[in-house]
Amino acid sequence: MITSFQMRAARALLGIDQKTLAELAGVSLPTIQRMEASDGNVRGVVESLTRVVDALNRAGVDLIGEHARSDDGGRGVRLKQPGPPPRA
Image 1 (cartoon, rainbow, N blue to C red):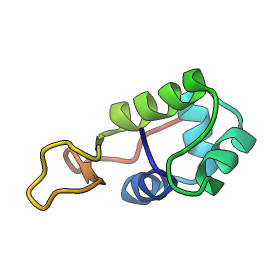
Image 2 (image 1 turned 180 degrees about the vertical axis):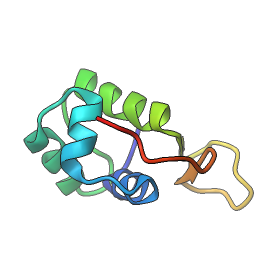
Image 3 (image 1 turned 30 degrees about the horizontal axis):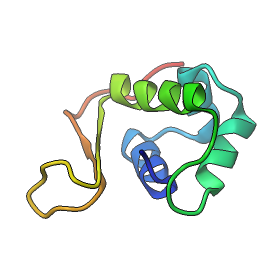
């Protein structure tokens, strides 16, 4: 699961807009807009959500789940390593 807050935070860490994320994930811009407009956990087609999570992962973002190990607990995002912004 990913929350809309995590999606927006991940994009901010990468310095990309919704259109670029849509291109990286191979989904439509309205799909990204709907996902980010979700309240809490992102809702949508599982395949589309998987594509978005995979794209964020390839771009260098770790998504930290509800019960995943992190120093302070809770959900979040973590930049794997600084680098140039991803290209579409």
